[in-house]
Image (cartoon, rainbow, N blue to C red; front, side, top):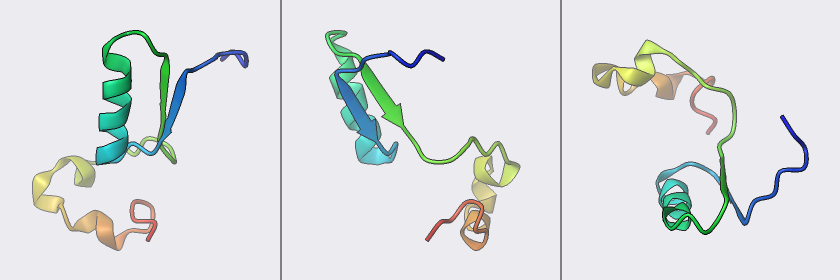
Length: 65
């Protein structure tokens, strides 16, 4: 990873608003946009399975509140 990468915009948080803002800024191709999200990737079946929707709320690994 290089340390001298430059971005026109840095969007912090990939929630619903952050993703929309980053998408809109990058649509034209005029701007270089970095979208940051906290934490590492959590590939876990309870996050991908709709029937397990409530399970992550009980786990501090997924629910930081």
